[in-house]
Length: 563
Image 1: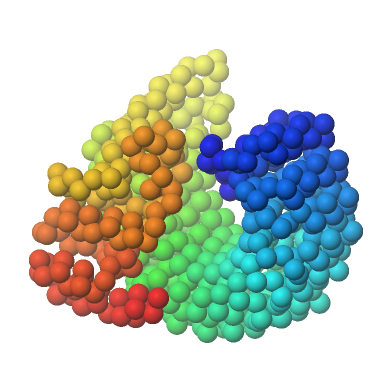
Image 2: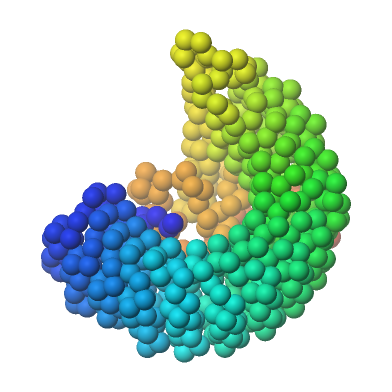
């Protein structure tokens, strides 16, 4: 769920037990105050009467464009009132309410003529099994020219409806994000969606997790990936595709150059069968995020992945939680971290790593200068392993997020039961306080470096500091970064940077680069996206790496020049 942030324009009153009477009071306030653009009422008790009052306000307001009514008690009448008030809204969330056929049909029909709504989220309502409703929403996609994000997850979508969705995707030119997880589409449904993907040129994100597509479904999706040129994110979590399905997907990725985020978690994938993924990752130049959580890759699978990622300069996020990884796997991960300077986020939570493995990872953290987030939650790491990590962090300046929750709060980090319930916890809390203090120091360094790039052309800027902000090229802030705390320094440039600002930002970065350091491919590609060919040539006249220059020019010709 997206958090509504801007305090000056957002009225954020979720989790407050607001009923219809208070909703009416809020609607009255909104009529008098025209500054609000977003209203967040999630997890309240707003019913039909309250929804009607809010709907009346929407009809009169031209500025209120985002409405979140997640988990309220709105029924058919409230949904119908909302349907008649969509004229100005761009974002509407009605997850987990109580409207049925009448209310949902009213919203679906309104979509046919609506010219403003871009985000619609209607999953988990009591309309779940009403095929006609989903069908009506889907049919509206053929005529709708504004909707970009549609969430139909956790509805019971039958085969006939999937056919209509697939047909709509062939005609629709605006939808970029479609979420259909937990929708029971099965192998046949995935086949129809795959056919649509071959011709669709706009859909960038498709979520199909927990749909029982199986190996045959994976084969159909793989065929689509070979031809599709728009999809950048694909979620196939928990679909029982197995090792054979993995082989089909990876073979397709050999030809696909656009997918950057792939989720293959919980698919019964075994470590002994990861050689095909390993071979792909060694030469991969597109995939940046890979989810392998809840599989059975074990230490053997980690070894395959680690060997592949040592030369890889593209993958930035890797998720390996719940994979029965032990100390042998930890040794392979440590070896990877010492050689790879591209990986930014690594999750190896809920595995079997103890103090011995933690010591190896700690040793790698002393050398690694790219990892910003590490998740080691619920392993078997004791006091000794934690102390080694603390010592390593004193040498590390880039890690800004570290998760180290014990597997069982009632068990000490050494694995023994805490008899008095205090002593072991006190030691753990004391050590974690040291970890948190170091992490806060690193966050301060990251923030300072980031703000320097955004607001100044400070020449006293080292290459190691640049690695702290390597996520900044696309202006994505880490989850822990609090915009309000840095508002006086950063201004709104961090939230809403224009293309011109992005280009100026990268020009500043280039001036700050030490000429004796070579850029890795990920950073080069991110820089190239915002620069002209003249900018590239001017910078690389100062660089001795002919290979980097040629690679950058080739990538620019193949991608940026088409924009």
